[in-house]
Length: 233
Image 1 (cartoon, rainbow, N blue to C red):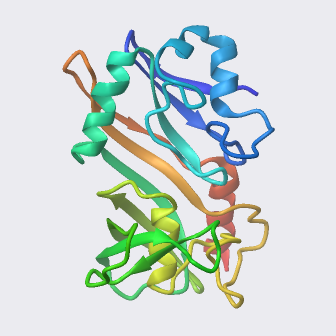
Image 2 (image 1 turned 90 degrees about the vertical axis):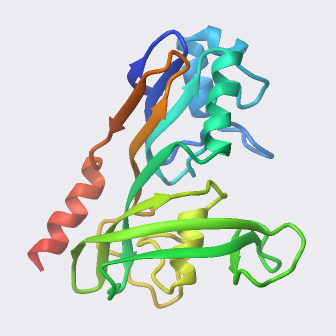
């Protein structure tokens, strides 16, 4: 597995995660993961944190592509995790939502917890719900382009809950195109799309050395081709 490293210094590494790759092993995972591939080339990453995630600072779902941050030292891992906890990291995604989102921009603010009827999924609840295990989740979006049956949006998450974007877009009845877990039975899927249309496109952090770094990632070819096809219809 060839993982593109787009930036690294003595403390941190930013890589391009391909779609279809698990970030680190969990549960019954037996396939090669992104961290496995990185450790083969950079064995020192084993010293950054504990197995199985080692220096991985945050996760991306298997079907999601884009920017992923990896710490190279234990000190860098703690430093970066603190930024995520304090919500000072900026993370943006490009997503193709099913249906026409009427508003030009919006905020989805709910509680999120594991779905009772399907342990693979998360579920969004109104803020006044008082159930154990629920955590606040905030997602902001703005519309980039509209198609007949879809809306391309720029998404910024203020919290980092599991499946947050996928769960929140399903909550407002506009699930991510191609999302087999959160999509509805009548959700359309663009011809040729073989995974969820979700890409981590922007990351802004402070490095342990005190520098502010910004990273951008273009849509991969498989997602670009979908937009080209939709634009021709």
